[in-house]
Length: 376
Image (cartoon, rainbow, N blue to C red; front, side):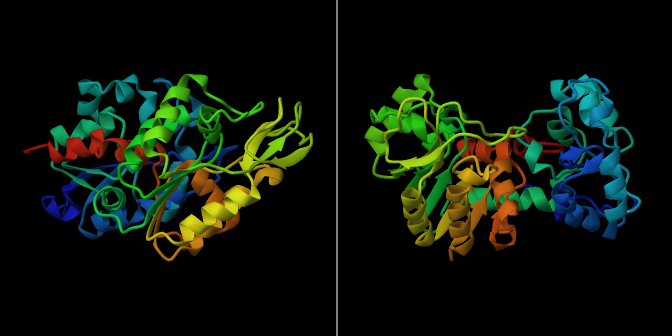
């Protein structure tokens, strides 16, 4: 996919540049928990500063619903940016104005006022047709930042000419959230490994008992169709680690209940919360022989030490794989960080939802805006 690059801009010397970034970082009690997304924008910021630009950054933060909310003030982010890139101002949260999510032309005009150039480096927001994403390219000479360009290069490469064997691993809770991703990936991959809560609707489609596990009856027919038409490529768990009825897990809860490993059929009320050791070993074998790997979504509730083994095994296999490895999605990245493996992955995507939407559609509203923007 061809996108206008920084080098395609008119000379930034002495020009005012509006830089849309994705600084939607986790904040607890006013302190940033992880500044990865801020640091990821530094190559673009530095290039612009080195070429004489006056950069103003803008971002969204959380979901303030179109009005100012002190809980979502960018002040902690502004302070961190001042440390990493002194002299680069950061506008207040774009979503404090209802015009952002509504893509209001008047809000776009206010954003662009006094600006000469626009750079989109917020891959994590590029799937949103919001004012700050799709508006400025219609009014200003615009380009993709380094982070955005690299994300598109990698993901586009997965869809067009990935080295084979190409293995994708999908986890997470609901099959409904990733059905279109599954359908698209099955057109490109050699093997699709399915874990997490989403696997139980597939297992249910094969008439296995899923006990009290997360299960989406409305998607049984979809899963059954995929298994019938593309079952050779889809690999499901062969064993499950489950929690006894009434057991507790999750944030803020004292872990209780019995944990046992089962085959493919769970007793009534038992909730599957991780792939079993046999599945973990089989999935690792598939991953180890891959030339290209894409991983999105944990294999279980890895935040609970009783259900961490499956996700750990997959994460380690991806990190050990000699092929080109890509990990996308907030929970997968959290798992990599949890296990200290992020540095061993070839590309860690900064945009979970944007990554999935790009895979599903091969394009994003923000990318379309850049290609069809000012003068285009």
